[in-house]
Length: 161
Image (cartoon, rainbow, N blue to C red):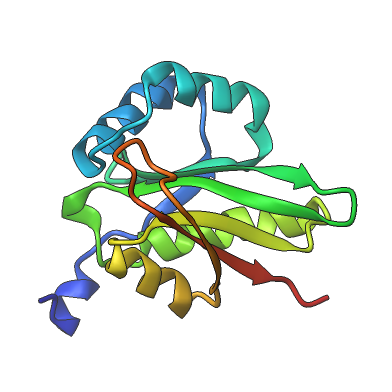
């Protein structure tokens, strides 16, 4: 457990837009964290499609986290889709994930999204609790969403303007 005085020694993360030079670091974080990681090519493709809503967290001159998402138009609403988020293990529980989510939410709001949607594994209780603390609510489940047939919990956060 991190103590208060230990937090004071942490360097704050800087959040900036991702660049092609960040992709190898992002993919390494993804492989570290997820059982079914995105391929490198998907991260590159996402940078092409979503350059305005793809961010990295930098601490001590290295990429330690990332978030990527894009806008989707349902015909009734435009909303952000938070597609992927990760923070390397040594930098977790320092507020970096929250900073990344806040930054992408801000970008989505600037692009006139009504809210944000995401999917999380039904067994990933920690991630669900993290998103709930940030104001996301469970909307419904998608059966057999992941490659191992695990269900996804779809969560939403609506913006108030």
